[in-house]
Image (cartoon, one colour):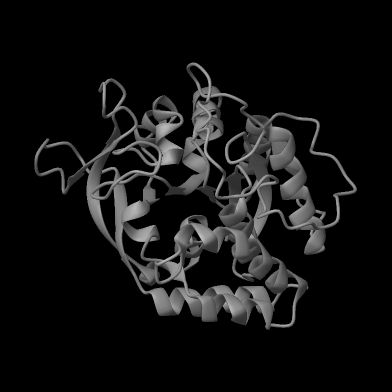
Amino acid sequence: MPVLLDVDTGIDDALALLYLLGEPRAKLLGITAMEGSVPLAQVARNTLAVLRLCGREDIPVALGAKKPLLGRFSPSGKVSIHGENGLGNVSIPDPVRRPAPCRAVELMARLIEESPERVTVVAVAAMTNLATFLLCYPHLKEKIEQLVLMGGAAWCRGNFSPVAEANIGRDPEAAQIVFSAGIPIKLAGLDVTYKAYATAAEREAWRDCGTRAGRFAWEMFIHYAAFYEGAPGCALHDPLAAAWVLDEALVRSLPAHLEADLCGRYTRGATAVDVGGAKTGRPCNALVGVEVDREAFAHRLLAALRRLP
């Protein structure tokens, strides 16, 4: 399956990338990156370094948005769950190449246009790059199989504001453009990704699986786990989106009409989910994840890490 990945590479983005690299059914065509968990230069370094760690320097990486469609990204002012370098303060060898000389949307357009098969786009950052692509290249929409998005908080508390999840809240205008594009969407929001956690024992299995990638994943999550003290495990937000691409049965979902709130004084960036379109009468434009087969997900993730160097 041909896949494009859009990231702002922090800890769980890096693990989503490892998952796709270790999954033989996924053909990762390229990666686009934007500012988010860390500044764009660090996102570029992290993404290229993870690819080098896995011996996949053939995969192109292009840089995109440094700000949302309107205004600027608002720093949280809090200690980052991703650490100072975005990878849990874990040191891995620097990349030996630079990002592609084109813009993120140009790389997306070229790879989608050249692919003989329809491409699945997995977006685990704010949706600025994806929305910009859809605005600039609307004729290529028909070559996209589906959009698998990590974002939104339908029925649970947000992590950007009391009602907004970070990937939607940081650029709700971009999210609304994506939701309105008419492309099939799978939405892995906080309602399901918080249920897709990795226990301490499962993370130790990554360490002991005999690969550099597995040990790197375990080391990153030492920092990440400190933010989940008292919980049964660490939420694997972005890796679940990557896994759902290849295994539909992992996630139970509901068809719904999906919109991002753009105007609310207290609700801007919230994800409005109308299951079945029952309240608005509007057509369903997404499958919204609600439950996950956590044990099966953990098994597939470990298997992917074992396949890597």
